[in-house]
Length: 113
Length: 114
Image (cartoon, rainbow over the protein chains, first blue to last red):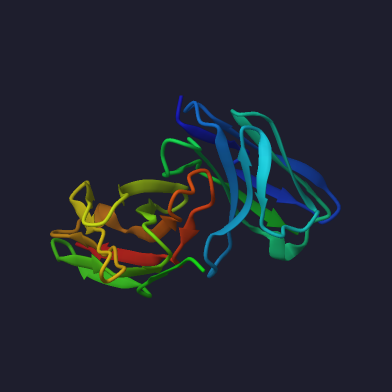
């Protein structure tokens, strides 16, 4: 099993739809992250969870709602998105106290129509 | 605040050429420094890291040395291959802040032709 998996890999949704992105890590980490990668923009942090508690929210609009039910799973619930939300959404994990590097999943390519 | 600046791309090289991608940072204390690589259609992969001054990170023929005096972490490879074509990101984690977000540079696209 690969370290960090994300599903779906591709998603097309309308502005009125509700969908969820899923991330799962098999590395025994306790910190998980959502990043957004848009064309021609730097990678942007969205949320950080440490031991299932949200520790950072980078002023993300409420149409993005994260959920972390346990240390291995992280979700990003999406509703009433805008076309400018189309991007690659990347999940990452790390050990929050003993190392600093983060391991990334392959991402979900989201297109909002 | 903390920030990372890396050279603008794209960088276009012939196979077996020498590669340098410049990266400088702004941060207090001694951040941890990373290079990540993103191949087309994929997520980011950790390429190498250095966690203290004068450390040299290396992997797959790539190297970078943590230079505190110049606040730099330049990526080098002696002989690039076509398979090295990708986007390279320099990043840092602030000192003593494991479990917080990475701060990324904008990325440098490398294109290697045979």
